[in-house]
Image (tube, rainbow over all chains, first blue to last red):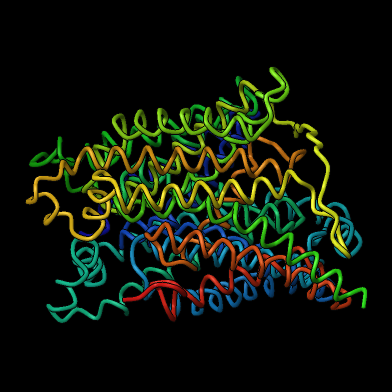
Length: 326
Length: 296
């Protein structure tokens, strides 16, 4: 159980957030907004943070999840509540297919080449869906009418409010447990070696490809579940323009870097800060949140490449709190 | 016969546009070749060039071709500023840092532009007649844009081949340590190449507006960033000349395939053309990462 100690501060943060949302009127939506950013941060961190590879097309996995759920609810609505279960299954199937393709093709590349290839995958997929008119093409899938017809207005409403939020919360908790497992297991050590020096790791006999694929797959799966619950179930529509929007990838990267890449607590704190700031900036300065975030991103990269948690870890070395911060 | 004429006129258009695409990608390739940094904020600088052309035309009725010089100066200055504030500290940093930094800079420029100029599409109309061919009309503005990009690329080529600074830049691309030990001031070359890369990019933004004079918008750059990636990879990342020829290939393929894909019923040729170009990008990266024209 010792290695799960670092989960304590993470779960405390989650529970405090949920309590604030549940008890203070009007706070539930802002809290779920923050939870979404924590979720994509934690999900991306499992790949970007652990391997050091920059995936600029990460949002494609959220899109696959969103489309999985969208296809299930849009084309198999007659299955009733089973369609929701099918949605999660399809979300996983779609993201696994994409993961296999990208993992087999792009993961052979490194650094800048990998980043460019992933942008290519994301945009290529989006334009394939729009150009070949797959799943409604650029008109997307609109579900609200169908859901109301099949499930009745009350249950449809329940799905898009309570159920979608509960799903997202469950995903966030699971994602953190998975991260702590990855970091503390043999996989985590192997990935650390890859991150520091991939060639050296290879020579030391580490099956580099295998561990990179594990991290990639984990991260993609969590991303797909987030896309299925926080986008399709909650918003009841899927538009290719929205779900492949590259800004979500960037936001996730900012969160990971802000909090500290490769740490458990990092993306949680990063997501919390980013989500909170974004929510209130969008109230104070609607439309100009990015103007505040872009210099922040550059500043973090130049001055604090380890992020908040990386900085804390260095400060708190040899204290009692240290083992709780991973 | 209509389809052949349509194809021919689209190919001519593609070739003219391809020259500008090539020039617009040379800056990206130059920066990658010298600094090993992918400028993910590339498109933002093209947008700056486009707005330079727009404001010069609207405010002082200066024709876009004359704005080229101003755009180059703005770009060079901006390049030096960005290099000394940000990039200089990231020379030996991992890719993650440089990718994020250039991305952040790109977004910052776009958001600043939006703050001052608003999010709406703007445009200008500069009509100076056209060349009449048998099956199509080629507006002179586009023709001049094409000629300008070829002249600029040629001047640049001669500068790289003949001058001492040009040779120094090529030496750094070839072997950083070797150049350093031969007495080349590598840091100065980094700064110069970055500034030159940004200058070229802003400059090409002016020429881009000659093709889409009413499509000027603060977020127009994203599209060109993605195209520039495809073109740069096509020509072999890091080789400005490869990029220039890659631009031609891309322009021809893009416009040719648009015509042909439009023949398939029930599809959206615009989206499919994009899909084809990104699929091509992946294939080249996989099979021949040094680019179609690259050697080793």
